[in-house]
Length: 458
Image (cartoon, rainbow, N blue to C red):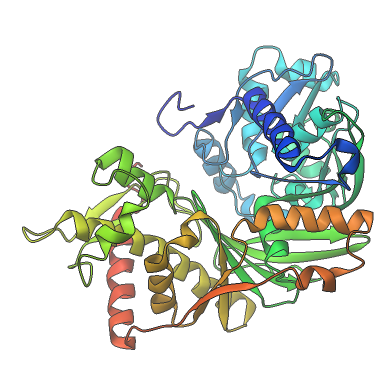
């Protein structure tokens, strides 16, 4: 739902209804009863913010989605007042409208009566995992896991608890917030599927994908190509604070063992292909883009910067806007399609460069998943631009695999993480074919194009 430019919302009730219907359909298709399911794992859009009435279970407004930019000016004011350093040290995050805290504050300030009701304990806040858990358990459990909580900008990632100073800064009553738990463990019983199934694993989508990709050792990296792109590097038991505006996030907590990750986000990844289809109309479906882009040997000097909702890491520029540059009379639909795919690979390369610098680890391979990872041309471009192997896993829906793994560990489907490593398989490996000089030229021209997109909306 797009009420205004830069605003992005969801109907949270619709999300619950579709998930419930899908779960029922899956049981029916598999010919199984609820009693035959060992556990449920939840993985979700992080940051997306829902507030609901504890008594009725109904949301008090539409959910504000992670892509929403309405609180950018408020976030700018926090930076101007010198809060950036403290926030990064406490939460591992940069100040940005991307995270839940400013969205939650906006709801409390703009929905009539919300702030008063929140202080009285009548309302509940959650990211999508918490909203689904509440509904699955019939309102019995209001909880989240550490990976999702670490994306709200309200959690102290060193203590694993909500931070009182940040609650005061954002004017968030503690009574609104869910209990923070480990990512693997029994949260409660789902009663909405015709039986009692333990909900035993929760992780935000990107942390779940890191787990599903079996990136269980420090230095291992995965990138998920979805609407956006999300790259995570396992950094082990110590949080690494970034000097390149990457995010330090909790990867997961199993038992008393917390692991951390560095993360970089590309706001517009696969969504650029949707825009070619729906916005420009130069392809009829997403699958056509690979064939169209392959009609030309290179981009012909054309670069597309898909900053439709700003630029993510390492730029963090909410005012950047999209551009196509380098057009000549010889430019064609195919050049634009190729530039669109290259824009995804080039944004990912920006993240890798920042991650290697922060961690001091040279990345040997990138494990990839998500819908757009099925595009062979894009994956070859990625290997060429990075100069390292790109490995596509046998199961590309690794967010689901990770959530299932966390749930299965909690109820004994797997004894330990070694069993999960055996679940992972390599489907295809892409190795670099591009000459270093061509790679360098692409990166230099891309940097020049992104500089021209910067700050446009301001």
